[in-house]
Image (cartoon, rainbow, N blue to C red):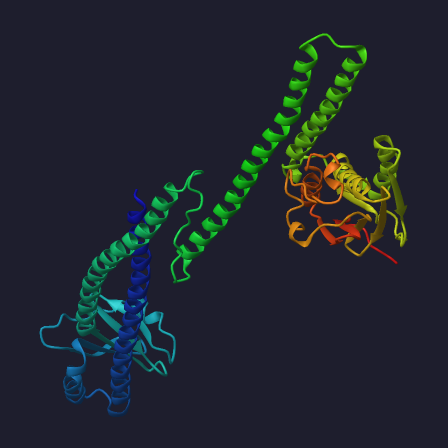
Length: 463
């Protein structure tokens, strides 16, 4: 079924249920009220006959006169008076009215001083007594109420039919309006593709559900466009970075093979090719690590990791890269609570992130030294990495975590080799572990990288 028909059907069905419920309550209330009012008339008539008979005795003429005078209030009225033994001692039937016949069992169920209402044939009746000396039974036909209720039913049926038509018509146009708005959003979405990702849905001024839907879709498109733009830049830069060392290797080999050369010349070429291969291997490894860190937490293995143990492994790693590199660790303010320095994460990825940041600090420091401190807050493990390098210009602070970005094009820093992926990889890994990384830098004095990683929430920190 088409959406607009489903909306229209649902709208009409809800309205019909509410309308029928209201009509049923109104009709039931009216019926109960009419029945109660008619029963009161029967009881008043029975009380009057009872007291008249009690005071005047069995005077048929007086009783007949009283019964006739009150005939206008009740239709097809019949009156019977029984003595204590249940014998009929007086009866009255309105003209052309069928005589009333009362079963003795009915009289037996009457309780003293309480009227007993029952149905006698097609009429409503009441049996009344006060001291059981005699019993008065009055019956009448509630024609006026029946006619009035019939008219009410006819009016309700007609009104319900009219309301159904009105609800269906208004629901149809309302559903068309809703579906038309959704169709516009659908048509707009079909025109948005990877080639035209800048287009956005029109939200309008009225902040209704469709506005929320359009806004949510636009936010989703913004995130997708940002992801696609990052992917395109990454692929473009990666292809360029991979092509450069491969072209250099091919060119050097071509030159070496062009003619016979001495052993020293061949050795020089091989060493140059070896440097390019190392750079290429580092680039490929970084790209693979970026790809691994681009998943979700659910896609990697999580274990308990001691951040201090990871940091103590890094100085030896830096010495393997260069004997000039030095890492000074400072573990002050160590928590008294056991296990508060533990976090849940992937050990290999966390080690890679810390190694890349500390490696950068060693590379750019004037004395090739990185100062690393480890502190703790109530909710986070904080790692600070300081260097005394040339610093980072303010206009580059927001872009240093982008893949293949390499700034610092002054002094001799442009001679330092790298892939431009280290900080991007570290940033992605820290984000994957629900952490944050901040940079403070002063040009000419150095930079400080602050890493905040959430601790295991099941532990309690005590100073």
